[in-house]
Length: 476
Ligand code: FAD
Image (cartoon, rainbow, N blue to C red; front, top):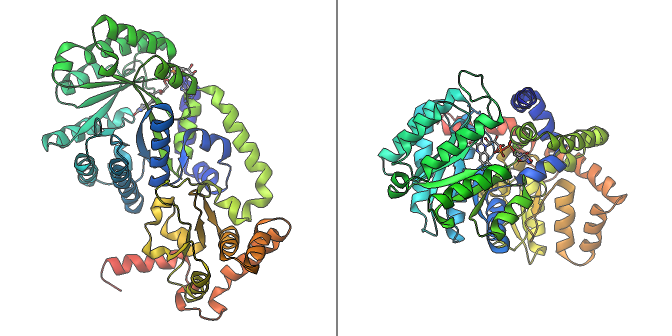
């Protein structure tokens, strides 16, 4: 099992495999099972549904750990700030989970501290609908010390920061003691990063013994008096039963702790626990960088390899279609938008004169939709990036689905009414849609030669980002 898990962790960290899987649309079954493929609005819409339909809480986490690129780090911070505000606005308890390597630990610990502070302040500023805190995920052993220091730094500044501890690590007994009376919550997991006998308890039984012993400490009177909220994160039904038994024996009521599971990992278990009156939370990852996260889930549960297999086969089968824009962007083309925003939205590249001219034409005909340049929209809300905006047109429909390229244009035309509706439908139905796809591709490629074009129409997205960086540094 450990060999399998290590192999999956290696696969998760392979940049080439990640790039291949995320860019070329093999996402389907595996991604959708474990991840909300979309932006903060989609994630909060999922959290609302979980609460309203199933009485389950959520902890939201933007995907993208182990990064040192400042743009990716900032994207995670902004997505975390956005979900914090949206959760507050939706009247939900505000729990945002982050990995320290997603918010700058690999680039500079100071940057990481500053970013964690920004998120924790935002969480603290939201209305209190339950327990609001920033939950620090725990990564491999090399990061345990720095993550605990980060939590301590935030707590010293009066910010609500909780931490995840791993039962498989021998050092966790000491770590728990050090945070027991300071931390607003501790999330106890078995640990997803196996080491060796020196650092780890070996074997399922030993890890479970460690888990139960730590759980006892988390449920103990000193922890309760200090206000610690114990979170038991596991899908192991036997262990859950034993933790619940322990809590009963120690006189801790059902609402004095909670069980947390990964979104999509154990639906039966979630439902059963809710039916028995336990507090249940789901860890809901969102974003488009789904591969490292999803493949680690395969490492934890070999049966998920079936999903992985299906995704890989699908990718091979769709190999011929890889150039098709919809397939390339499939991972971000099914974002579910918050029910708060119902008007469809056409997003175009406002730096391109030709696109702007087309959008102006569309705006005159679109009574029930908004038309906005991507540069004026917080596109991360829809799981998009500035690069996406400069590469294609996007249509966000009233259900929050995101459509790209000729599919976006088809939907926009359909909404224009009159004969344009027929043209719009044709763009979406084969075989006409194949023609629409080809025409869209040609127009997008040669837009700098079309009427109304500006120099920006000719620039690649890389040119644009280079220019943006120059402008940021005042050299433009
Ligand atoms: P296991 O003994 O691994 O599994 C018990 C049973 O649960 C299995 O037989 C299987 O049927 C089922 N199961 C387990 N995992 C899955 C899955 N992915 N899909 C389907 N079924 C499954 N680890 C860290 O190192 N750091 C963290 O910050 C961290 N955060 C986490 C947060 C949450 C909310 C959860 C639930 C887990 C987190 N983990 C984290 C992962 C954790 O350490 C384990 O690797 C993982 O939960 C599997 O262990 P388990 O307790 O579910 O028990």
